[in-house]
Image (tube, rainbow, N blue to C red; front, top):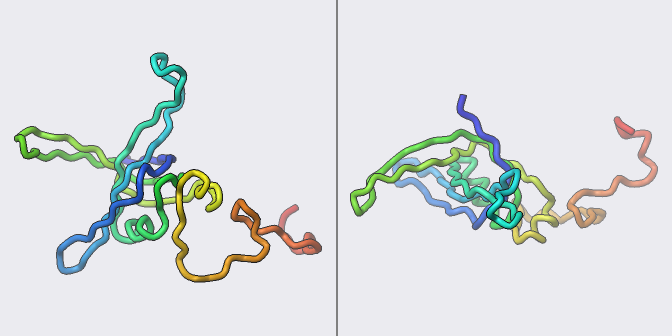
Length: 150
C-alpha cells in the first residue's frame, strides 16, 4: 500500500501549468512545510520541518489554483512517487513527490489570513451577516430544540 497523509503550510503559491496534448490537463506543483515531531539537539530546541514536493492533477490542480495560497495550513492525502532524470551536467537526479489525491483546509479563513495565506472566493456570494472572525456562524437564539444534538 502506498498512502501518505501530511499536514503543513504551503511555502509559496502553487505553480500551475497545463499539459500540451489534445485535452489540456491542469498540473499544480507546490511545497508543503511539515513540522517534525521532536527536536534536534544541535538545533537550539528549534522546531524542524521537512519540505515536501507535492503534485496535483486535473480537479485537484484546479482546486489548488483557485483556493491554495502561501502560508495556508492544509492536509494532503496522496501517494509517494519516485523518479529520476539526467540533468544538463549528465548527473542522475532522483526525485520524490507526493501525488495529491485529496486536499483539506486545516484552519479558518481568518486564521489562514493571519498566517500569510489568502483565500480566493469561488463566486461573489455575500458573506453571512452573523459570521464571526473565525469563519463560523453563530447559532441564533431560540432554536436549541431544533438542533439534533445538545
